[in-house]
Length: 267
Image (cartoon, rainbow, N blue to C red; front, side, top):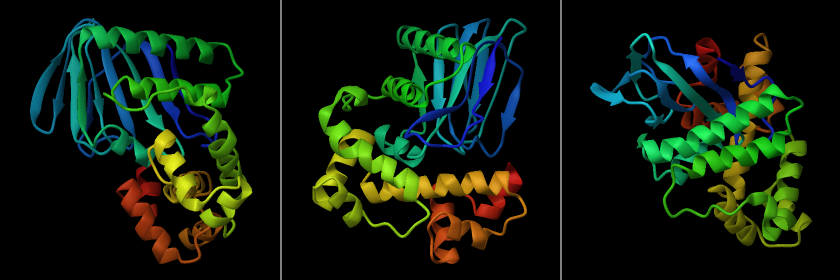
């Protein structure tokens, strides 16, 4: 019954905070929900999930994807085994738009079989390190597309526009997020306009270039909040490229649903 947790900084658009399969599932209650998108699927036995006051059965092969901070609980019989994953990444906040803001998505047995196969393949990669972070990000994107209807799903690794314009800008953001960089400067590095660059970001990643940079900074701030518990919020704000600590706090709460100090206490 393997379970794996992320133990590296966030550097990719999408990645897994945790993943597991063949898990002997214990009852769970989350009155305030979970901080990331959370998928749960029955492999054996029978489970039931309570979401915002309603009860739903989870038969073998069936699953459910739950948005962050949605109140839920689940339990099952003694034979209940599950597969699951939780999604995060530097553009985690764009997932809601990709999923048309659906807070709960149920999966039938046919779709569940495809998702279970993907989970199994990813778990095997964890069993045989080292893990390729970019390859894992593409795997997560593939998983995410299982819950999307009619959304662009071409492999990022194969698209020339992504590789020529978007990928180099992502690397610049990841290297210089703590500096006062602008989308104008980033677009000039790949010889396109800021408007065209943001259109490409929306096409491939579901958000504008500015939104990506902001979310990346907020996710780096989460790392500092957890890994440097004695560092003040104001200093963390400066470390991730915000000049104004109050603006940082407002953006953090908008994207994470809690203030930086509340996030630190929760985790």
